[in-house]
Length: 159
Image (cartoon, helix red, strand yellow):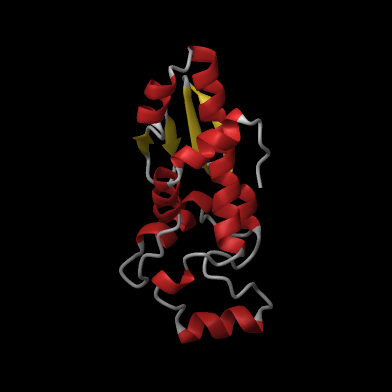
């Protein structure tokens, strides 16, 4: 069992050492991974809304900030409209949990997919510096896996 982050397009096995130590059975392991995938979505959204990682990112360009203000868009780094964040989801396919975006979801009136915009933001482009959100949340998860396990065992709710 594993979780795949669609922006990174690679396998991630959160808490594998913890799971081995706890002796999870197949059903419990499946539920834990489901919990982690859902929790990951919640934590990414919270990171954007509460601007957790802004201090680590290059600021938006002056021209882009002015354009966002003029059009009444969010001044948040990872958000202009709510489309990108509202498109984030988790699902299970082929025995793996995926966290990411629907590849067929596009910005209105464009051929630009939400997944492409997320990749641009995460890894940067020739003209835009990277603003790693998914990788930052993943590092947070890895450092705090014991807490996530505790919340899972106690039947805790997502934030």
